[in-house]
Image (tube, rainbow, N blue to C red):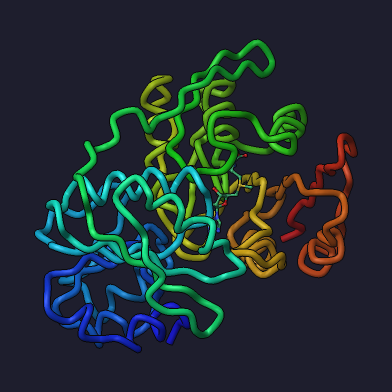
Length: 335
Ligand SMILES: C[S@@+](CC[C@H](N)C(=O)[O-])C[C@H]1O[C@@H](n2cnc3c(N)ncnc32)[C@H](O)[C@@H]1O
């Protein structure tokens, strides 16, 4: 059981007597313990694992589920702006006097995030255990649903003007990341035309490739529902019909055919830890889904030990560029 769920279950009477929404819940047995609760997940991998047991009580997506609830538990998301956005969105569905809870790990910044509940009323720390805290606020007033959550910004790479759309919490919300910018400069001579942008975020890389190569077929993949919605909006706003967006936690989940190229600015932070698990899985799975002669091209901070991982699976790793603290790596599938 996730430690945040354990903290909730130290006071089960608070969460068992009302229709409750668990927003951003972990993939554990909390829904099994709280029979009145409904889960909203924005992580495709966790949602898949939860829906195998709780399909009728689980929603995956970027929009709050259209089910009735009289109280909310928000599991602290990573980005500060996403906390504001979710607090406003969720509280707008409650009535005055309803109880709103926030739970999260201390090292993830729960103490500071609890101050963001001040817009609803006076937050009260209910519990502190398992390196987590649980906060409660009784709604003094009901906020309006947020209207202007989208950030829209222009991107011009290689004389290709694009408008990027992103929701709060999506990677590099409202601006271009330095690593992604370097990758955009090194996307020449990709083989074939069936390409996948892994960890697409707001769609910067995939949309650029789709625009530059109208005859290519692009799949944009991300685990996060807010990223998926952002990429969909970016593609629609730029009328890019040669690209589609998929919600998935892994390359192995979707790509059943032989891809010509996998392009990525892969994630290496998860929660507050730095680790290689996701990038390692990406490199391993890319080797499996690429056709012979297909290519993996990624950007990464130059301190990350990706070349060894790439060599382990592809037998070689070429560095195409090194600038501004990032490197572009390339590996071709020998068959
Ligand atoms: C470094 S960001 C890159 C975003 C975008 N490509 C760009 O360049 O702006 C990495 C992205 O990977 C996504 N991600 C994290 N874990 C993932 C996983 N297991 N499967 C697929 N995508 C994942 C994150 O949601 C995030 O959008």
